[in-house]
Image (tube, one colour):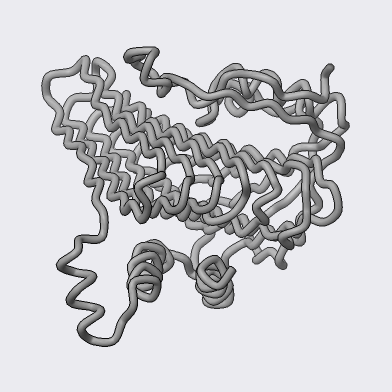
Amino acid sequence: MANIINTDVNQFPSLTWNHLSINRTHLDTSVETGIAFECSELCDGFCAEQQPFDRISDDVSGLETGLGKAFDAQFDAVLSAAAVPVQVFTVRKGSKGCRPVVLRFTASGATAAVADVVIKAEKDSDSTFIFDFESSAEVTGSCGYRVRVLAEENASVKVVAVNLLGKKLLHFSSIGSRTADNAHVEVIELQLGGGTVFSGDMQNLSGVRSSFSGQVGYMTDGERSLDINYVARQTGRETDSRMNVDGVVMDSAKKTWRGTIDFVRGCEGAKGDEQENVLLLSPDVANKTLPVILCDEEDVDGRHGASVGRLGQSLLFYMESRGIDEQSAKKMMVKAKIASVCRFIPESSLVERITAFVEEAFDR
């Protein structure tokens, strides 16, 4: 059926052993309607319009996003079947100093909705877009979105994505960008809610000296699952990509993170750095971490790594000797992880809600 998304997603660019079950995952969900965002007032220099997906320009329609080409094809079919328009934001040439555009979605009832957003940042512009998802604990169903960013010469775009959904919801997000000469894209992502979560991020650094930076934080508890795929495809000369991931896995939760820096032939002078730091707070969690560098160019500088650890007994003893019990110690560590990402979010009220969400997770 055309309103079904049923495909492998988060395909790893360079396949490894199948028995590790890390090469890909599978997304199966239905879609009934489009997401109704509550959008903040736009500044001068910003333009917003809705367009049918089949009228989107070729430079946008051909842009692959993080969940993969198969997902993008099925997502387009879903948009057509459910008559969901594409929300296109254009940031005019030279627009700077504007307040963030906030797109807030509150799920209710039995949700089965999607959103498709295109951000066109014209030359010398500077913009920030915040995607804010929340729901009560009782809401069921699924909700997801795709964001495609085209950053023209010297443009700067920040995308903030925050998931504060209830545990009964399936959630997916797929982000893709293409950067022209000296353009910069930044992605700040917090995956804190949802029962089953899929997150994909594909950065195409094609312009000379274009760059990408990313900060990702997550908290996965209970029996929830989180699957993340990050790819920086660097084709332009002297491009620079940097990704830092901080997260916590608790109880009997499952988490997979794939991180790939792809140095394509011709990207002389390119640099890339990806790091994940994971804190495991239970012996029953399932954590998979795979940082990889693919290199088809000699003159590059690539770094990657991962740190996976637990709360040591010596640290717990130290805290308990000062009146901090084990549960409080765990809460402190989780809050510190999330706070390290929150400092990049330019919206104080949203940061307060994030802090309250983390507090509530430990009180349940």
